[in-house]
Amino acid sequence: MITSTLENKIADTRYDVHPLIAQRWSPRVFSDKEVTGEDMNQLLEAVRWSASSRNEQPWRLIYAHRGSKAYERMMSCLSEFNRKWAGNAPVLILAGYKEKFESGKDNFHALHDLGLALGNMTVQAQSMDIALHHMAGVDWKKAHEKFDVPAGYHIATAIAVGYYGGSAEELPESLYESAQAERTRIPQASFSAEGKWPEDNN
Ligand SMILES: Cc1cc2nc3c(=O)[nH]c(=O)nc-3n(C[C@H](O)[C@H](O)[C@H](O)COP(=O)(O)O)c2cc1C
Image (cartoon, rainbow, N blue to C red; front, side):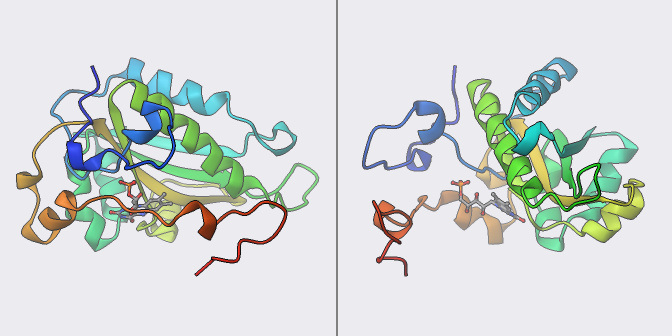
């Protein structure tokens, strides 16, 4: 059963989309339900079967369960803002990519492919009633240091992972309001057009 469907969080779509897309959102509180090793295997399998430029599969992920030393280390790499809520998540992930091909040439599409793979993971997670909250607010230099990330790789984001649930009332007041807010989007015409650059791109 999908419990992510807090009514004001369901996307107000103009056209029909799959419920896994319409019902996804980025919570800052989560259920107490454990995210198991098997759950993680399923999420990582969705990453594994993603498309990538030249099948390079440049994504690299480090994950940690709450209660472990690695989890605490990951928390210490997050921005002050994200540290206010990310500890609500039973699992944290650091997501990075390999910057170059074996030939030494830059892989300009590595960040694209990491994003695409995390998109796949997001949809897989949604089908399991698991929410992912992606975070740019991570000190990548600190993450590289604390997790011995080898040269040639770059940590791009962190992700909070947990089953949908919990109550926004658990959040500090400053975050409570945004947890209640409606989700908004620019119209299609602002980012797409047939046969030309979208004119309505404000
Ligand atoms: C790459 C990326 C970085 C993000 N960074 C943060 C972050 O550091 N902290 C945070 O609270 N939310 C972060 N978010 C969540 C976005 O704010 C959120 O996806 C956006 O407001 C749309 O809301 P929705 O995901 O509920 O549709 C990030 C999302 C993405 C995709």
